[in-house]
Amino acid sequence: MVIKIPNSSTTHLTLFDLLGQDEVSLAKGFAYVLGCHKSIYFSFLHLLGIRVRTSDAHFKHLEIIVEKHRAEGRTDIELRVPNTLHIIIECKVHSGRITQQRTQYLNSFDPDAPIKTMCYLTQERGSQLLFNHDVHFKHISWLNIAELLNTPDFVNLQHIKQFLSFAQRHYEVQFMREILIQDLGDATELQRFIDFNVYRRDETFVTPLYFAPYFTRDNPAHQPEGISCLSKVLGILTFNPAQAQNVANELHSFPNSEALINRWQQGIALGNQANRINTYFFLDDPLAFRSPLRKTHRRNSRNWIGSLIPKNRCVSFTEFVRHIPELNQQQAQ
Image (cartoon, rainbow, N blue to C red; front, top):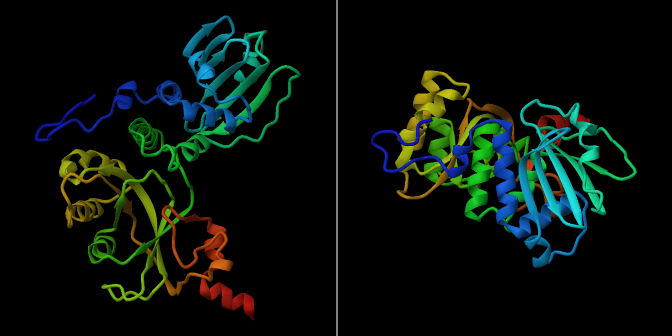
């Protein structure tokens, strides 16, 4: 593992990166986050459907163990509060699915715990229901965890920023899956997008499949107001542009051509402020529309965009297609 490259002022890694890149590493990182922040631990219990008193005494008596060896096997994460709860979490990443572990650890739960939960934490949302008279089964995805942490209450905490970045870079844990729509009107950012296929913004952990800029009214590039193109997101990186030399290898790991990488690098170098961390979306060539998609009145903007586009506004493909003017005209005929 390269900790620091020549000609850089500091390492580009976090402590989470030192864990490695397998599913055990992600489990350890998440367990560490739960142990560091009481509010996140109780929010996770709420996500599991567990209702307990959010007291300091409860958190004080909480035990968190990773890779506990049992006769039945080795569990990924265990949460225990004596005489209160026992949660066993099995973690999978990428295309990994829970198979044998579905019932493997049923005899491992503390008999004196009134709350017993078997949690399967996977990359995909699960739908298989399992029932046991004594143990509650819960299947959630890393997407659920990402959505839990990527909120105003938590995302500005240093450990959370680092864990989300770690999960995004090494495991492609996604926060919102489809189309990100954001205003684009600043002259520098317009040039960065139009000329270099890069969208830059303040630090974020949203990971959409596509980016659709909404060109603001009277924008300096004289683009018609609205959404007139859609670009596939080929990669996302968050870094200080003063350390741009650290990301060359990362750019080559994205689906790309050398010509596109050269444009991305020019886009990174355009109009930067020192010592400011930004998130860069590296985009494929955009697909243009004949007529721009527009905002709707606020009362009709559910699942779409109204007068103000909020930060990290993502919509589904279904909703996006529904607002393409050509299709609207066909439906009206």
